Amino acid sequence: MLVKTFGSAVYGIQAITITVEVNIASGTKYFIVGLPDVAVKESYFRIESALKNCGFRMPRQQVVVNMAPADIKKEGSSYDLTIATGVLAASGQIEPETLDKFIIMGELSLDGSLQPIKGALPIAIQARKDGFKGFILPKQNAREAAIVNDLEVYGVESIKDVVGFFNGTSELKPEIVNTREEFYDSLCNYDSDFSEVKGQENIKRALEIAAAGGHNVILIGPPGAGKTMLARRLPSILPPLSLYESLETTKIHSVAGKLAAADALVTIRPFRSPHHTISDVALVGGGSNPAPGEISLAHNGVLFLDELPEFKRSALEVMRQPLEERRVTISRAKFTVDYPSSFMLVASMNPCPCGYYNHPEKECICPPGMVQKYLSKISGPLLDRIDLHVEVTPVNFSELSSDRAAEKSEFIRERVIRAREIQAERFGNRPDLHANAQMSPQMVRDLCKINAAGQTLLKKAMEKLGLSARAYDRILKVSRTIADLSGSEEIKLEHLAEAIHFRSLDREGWAG
Image 1 (cartoon, rainbow, N blue to C red):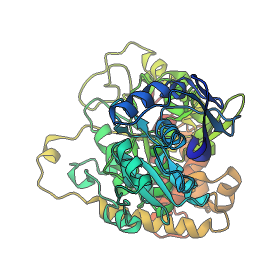
Image 2: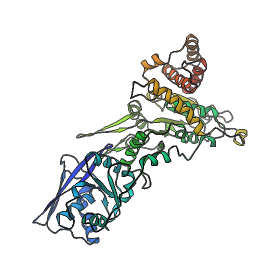
Image 3: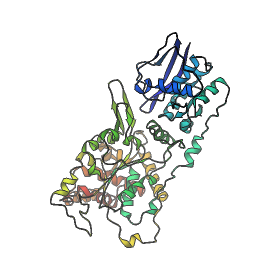
Image 4: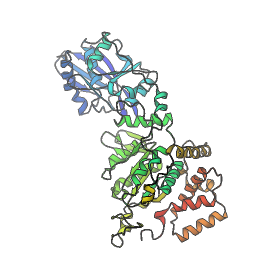
């Protein structure tokens, strides 16, 4: 008897429906064809044990399983339940009439229980697009898939539940998630807040500017000055995710298997902080079965690289193109996968190996030339993509012990949102542009015009401070954002002066 069941393969953040054909005929062997990988081939042993332990039988005849389309590689253990359901139906243990209305996915344990799968959300979206009535999958992934409307999602704990459902001997309750309610209830629900930070008003201002214009930022300061603490609070002042951004971010985390069973949607902006020993592939994505890297998991959020000079140079270099294009393309011989990676880069570093160069109280003990050598670990092209260089100095005792209430993140976020609205109006005819940081050099010339006094100030600053040529565009972009924050149509002298202040690493002799 020939039976068809349906599963799904995930490539990038898209899914492709896979037809699993099971035919039982005379003979004794088990064959699985259609470009299965080792994990799919091993499914026979998991399926056989699961069926026996749940009181069902594995046919002692020839079982041929074909996974179509046969030219796409099938990877992972998520097809266990799809194949097992087909085997049970082909051997007459399940009524096959309604099988073609459901996508069925899940990894089987030897006792018949189900393990969670990756990519439940993109699979559910594709299932609805292909006109399936429902999606049967492990209980742990049910909430994640249930955010897709007009699709019945059934979370099951064991293969017994699936058999009972198709045979009509037991009922399954569809998982219901009110997507909009889920989204708005936990929007901007951050654990940390800027009001918890004592002092550091200059750094808070720099991060507010960065958030308002989508600028990348590097924090330079001695150990214990609060660089990491400040960076962790940056997502709390970014504009809230839109529902579209939330769904896109959730798809990436779903494919990577990073969503908890209780989560349906990613409703706050991601904050990813990889260790400096991370490999190139783990940072940008890839592998034999391409998976999203840290820069894609930070999509629509913040990627924080602590101790930037300690990262491998090759890992930092492969990040340059995604920073510009805001997506990662991973190419293989037979296919190409795209992962979005539109993130804000926040980096931090000590000014020198000992950490106390330019410290107001402690003396640097590094030998001559060591500071310059340490800074040269960061390539010019990467530094060229960072708009704000901010010096972080330690907080003194009087500020630490002060009872003065600091400004809350929600008030800073309101100013950031207003500035972003101005930019949205400015770039209304360019759907690919969302913030000032993404302007091209020509757009900088057109939209960041300054008067004669501003030109004089900028010229003097570049001469006196020894600012490099690459700092020119960066200063204009940042000053445009500062003007937006203050609600000004023109870039004024004070906006330019503040932007110049945030170019520490471009100053001649800074690391001399």
